[in-house]
Image (cartoon, rainbow, N blue to C red; front, side, top):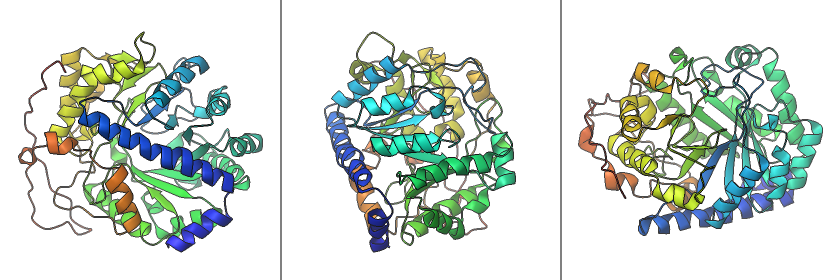
Length: 433
């Protein structure tokens, strides 16, 4: 498998783009993680990776979307992005995830990429604004990887994305990227209507097309129209994890995940401090689906001071690590309400109903499945996660396993759900650093 993957990288991609990826994202990204670890050891904080929703507008109306895509357009302007990226680079960061809305609706997006050739950008996109000319420019830059969202076949995609002809329009953008040998990925938000994409046949098709990496992430029922009926069952989540681990050891394609370490233990990148999120209005949030904030990139103080001194973000990380290794917004929305009340955190949406949405949420399972971890079979993934993607001691410091009650002794077969969890009252962290 490793030989076939190396062969693909050598024969199916532009070598200059592979070098940009290896240097800007691989080597420099690894250094940013090492700096993050050293900061934590000194009692300081700045996330090594940032995700930035650069604009709220989108041409689609996806089920379960938490972004106010139909609201008045708000975007992070070029000067603010330049300042944000430059301050993060000064802290050692080199990788930035670009989200929306639809990022390519930001008219200055390519200018931003061009201004920072020493960084690497992953763009979460529906692909419909990637024309032949745009793809050519992305190849010229060499520091951008589009991650194109494919949510199913023609019928399912139209239903999931709220528009007609979504699949064909998305595939045109994807094909333009592949034609110009841009490093390209495909992601799927796995839910009830597209669970069939979690298959070896689909992975083989992506490899045949020339896609270099893929990401199967679990649908999270949040936002004003959460569509909880689309959520996966606990056993389906278990099957997705098992599938990813098996395909990583078998197929010449990179398969991304952001919610497990090398031993298969669940983690939350926001709770570990690996990453936080910037909204289209400049608000600094724990993650994209937790739309609460106290600070902004537009505040007067430097970003370094903002992240290091934010009591709201610090309390979020500590409280979440005490409660679960999974997704706190799914498992414990009550804790987020308590956190918002303690800090008088503002609702960072245009609709202004986030607290009501959290209060109405039903507790659901997430990636945390104690006692039933599936370790990585691939030594390469296990090694990479050991050095660069783990919990950084967050759960060792804060997590209390007695907070959860395991109601089963054996790992769940495909027909059995993972263990139930017993909710407990957690103590809110004290104010101050």
